[in-house]
Image (cartoon, rainbow, N blue to C red; front, side, top):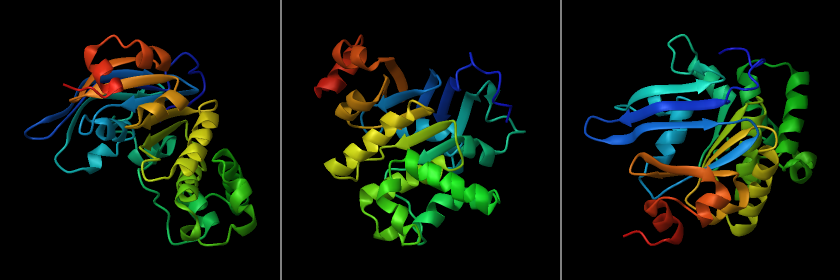
Length: 258
């Protein structure tokens, strides 16, 4: 990957004509969309519209699914992440992923947060500092700092999801991708995750897939609406939710699909 300095005017992520196809259907069709520094974009749309495939395409996780053909470019600070010379592991460090359900390991809270740092063989001093910082940024430090050696599986579902966010943050990504991260959580846990995302968008690029229009309204700066693999409309959150330009967008937001 290219150096990250000197890229002040370049979108952190630029999606350029990306299509994803299987042998018999098109999942995404020529999507183009830029993501600027310190922003939170909510990607919304009905089930099956391609939201999850889209977000997995950004950090090359989609290519792990057999049978998918990916065309177009995904630029990270101007460099195509699908260039054959680019290591996909490095891409996934730069663009961390948090999944729909918490994916904690049967290990301690500390070791869960440190997992990515262990893979890159960071020093113990670096790991200690980075784990503390990541847990603080994920809004979890005050709840777990006294039992970092305790089992992560003993945490509540919401705490486990914020631990997954901390694990992604520990390797200091520039982009955080989240695929419906609160869909399995209760309202109180959802509120804590949303508060965490609102803080994080002041630091990095956050791209959130959500089926919840209310959540998009609460946390995002911008909304992108996908339907049947197409990017129908994108704009500032208030404009998209209150004054959508496209009929399909209005139907989705109001829950009146024909």
